Length: 152
Image (cartoon, rainbow, N blue to C red; front, side, top):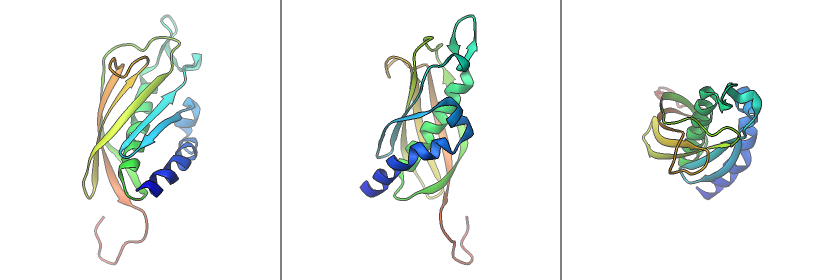
C-alpha cells in the first residue's frame, strides 16, 4: 500500500492537470494518505460567482469536492483503478469567505468489489466550519485485461 501511495502522490498533480476543469481551477494536492485526500483551489477573481459579494461560484466547490473524493478513493485502493462518480450529494452550508482559498478533505470509508463510498467537506478557514459537505459513491473498474467471461 505504501508503494501505491507514494506513486499516487507523484501522479496526482499530473492526473489533475489532465483534467481541463481541474487545470483551469488550478487544483493543488495538499495531502494524501491511506483512504484520505486534501486538495485546494486557490482564490481567484475569475472563479467568483457573484461579483457583488466576491464569493467563489458553487460549481468550483462542487468540482473541488468531486476531485478530492476521487483522490481519496484512489488512496484507499491497493492499486490504481479507473473510477467514475456514481453519485455525489452536496450540502452547501454557507458562503465561502471572499479572498480565501478553499480546501476539501475526503475520507473513503468503505470499498466493495465495485463501489467506493466517501464523505468530504470543503472549508475556507477551519475544517470544523465547512462551506459544504459531500457524500459520494464511485464505481470501480479495475485496470488491465479481463479474463474471458469475467463480468465488469
